[in-house]
Length: 94
Image (cartoon, rainbow, N blue to C red; front, top):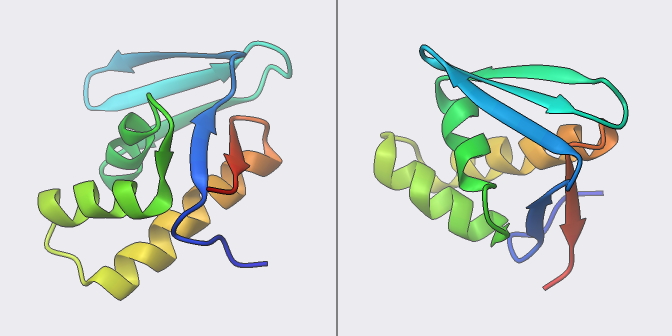
């Protein structure tokens, strides 16, 4: 099921993250799952520090990178979808 642009992305309360050089390492303290984000993945992750809609995250990414809005929406939508499965973020309807 595709994620709507109005869906709100919120980090799990169990997440601890830290910047190491050009990467962000995120640890889910409940599951032990660890992920490393760099480049645009890091930029998207940083946008999830506070609850934001997928559309708001896209707007920030589009402003930072030269990316077409349709492509941005597709890639940004895939990011929280994958992280939801790992318990790193939660999605809520607007």
